[in-house]
Length: 439
Image (cartoon, rainbow, N blue to C red; front, side):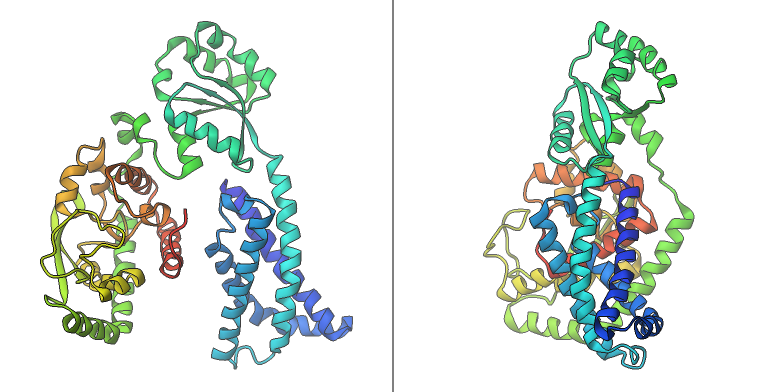
């Protein structure tokens, strides 16, 4: 889903929230004059509450492509989001009674009911409108990744694109007739894989497309837009030279300051729980409370990562943790499920070994095996993180194939890293702390 569509959905939801508030007050007081006066009193406190609602919508994937997954999915997602938002708002009302003194609690429940129905119809209308706004695309070339992209578009009519024509193996005749084909298909975008760009005839045909106001997009950029990961099998070294920035001093300085501030604040909050966890680890199984492990950091430099021990001391076995792994203690299962075993990594953040957000640091043994992946070393040009884009976008890897898939997400992060993307990753991480992974 494009950023423009996400922005339209966000603005629409905000408008519907305030309209719902006005209707809820009118229903409650059944007097236009009283409702108008009450709206003025409510708009300030409820603006703060609406921020919580928008966050709930985000956590329930209402600003992602799956938000157009069908009527049943939309209804369930909105019901879940409104329920969570209402409970969060009730908590805010009772935690800050002075700020919300002008807001009767009953108005919140009326608002929730009104908003659910208005928002559902707004989203359904937006879904139909956005489905008709897809761009016609002509795709050249043939590969497993191109097939993946075509299948995705065919099964996701709200993906901003519609395949108007596919030329798997373009010959000289196809290339010569490309401008006429574009006109006939009313195409607005032509997607070209990199290996075809060196074709002189194709370059000439693409040049002739300029007067037609057609966008020509490299397949790697097209794939990245669709899946928010990089098609590593389609890339060459020159792509990395053109797209990967190894130094962003302002971003890195601001990020480092935020990492230290957040790590110190969270450490202060979790100090007593951490002491209790350490004691429980010591009492429930033999071995050290904190497990130290060598990981690979920025530029491939090794460092020691700290976690509360979740396995039996000196347990040996597979490099990946397996389902119902007998090496994990009973307490360890709880700590892993709640992610509380990672509290000691706050010290790694303060030391500067890792950041709050970045590619997860791999064990030295695993990293040595992953080096067989093309371009694996690129993930090391940035500092690793406590959480990362691959972690919130893909399930935990349990094979080399899945590790390679996560590498595609890691390279996407390296290319597109920013404070905004870090915030998105942080918010998704908070969500996954309370829910099991769903892609």
